[in-house]
Image (cartoon, rainbow, N blue to C red; front, side):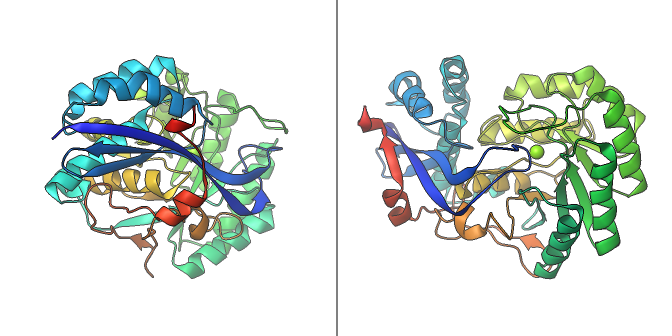
Length: 383
Ligand SMILES: [Mg+2]
């Protein structure tokens, strides 16, 4: 089997209403934007992958100039040598892992199996946690927790973005009081990378992270995500040692070597690679298994669109050390029809809060071609 062509398209699907992410105060979000890659083969199998979020035409240009010419003619199932080509393309543009996702999709389609069954098949369903994304008042968080519980969710991730710790803890107290022990609570501080933010955003140091962690322990919170700067491995490791709550992170770290370094230092209890953002699916699997070998958990990060979600889901199902799966959903501003609207069979929870795979081969999704066509704003052929 040989790769005959690689195309990339920029897709932008308008949101039903404008909203703001809790972690990007002051930035108005009007759409879901991502790059879609298709890898074509001489046997008619087509692999698909998507970026986390749109970087306009930069991702397309990187694929066209630094990746496609070196992959065309190669066997797409050779994940290691082809993965090296992607790794070496990395310094020239945005992360190219969406291409890796398309190659892995082909591997599954050749075998006519979903990837998780080829890669360890640890489970056939997994508990979802919902991570509502818009900023809310203390009461708003308690209300959305109850709403999610009503829908069947067994866990919620709260976003802590207040200027004071007192306000942050009030949110978690209100949620705990509302749901009692019927839900697990996670919290995300989003301190690893402070994005280019227009609004006001707190900057945590070790002291705030430690004091927050102590309060969260009292409230029996399952994990604290991204309490400190992405590369402050030693300080993160110190926090992990000095607290009993799980410390989680890794969604912005890139490549196997960074994760290995973090594992060596004992940086986190829970590692959160993302097949679109940190490594491709094949490398994410290795990150998860390395974590497993050290007695650590791996709960992939995911956000953005139904294609990346599906790739991360395959890795989560494959891994023996993945107790939960992040489910991008906000009943008010981020419905399934929006973030998974581009695939024909969205992943949804059952009445007990589990997500089940589609059992389609590869990453397990088919594109809704009509939606993709309608919202394509640039392609490899555009320039
Ligand atoms: Mg996060």
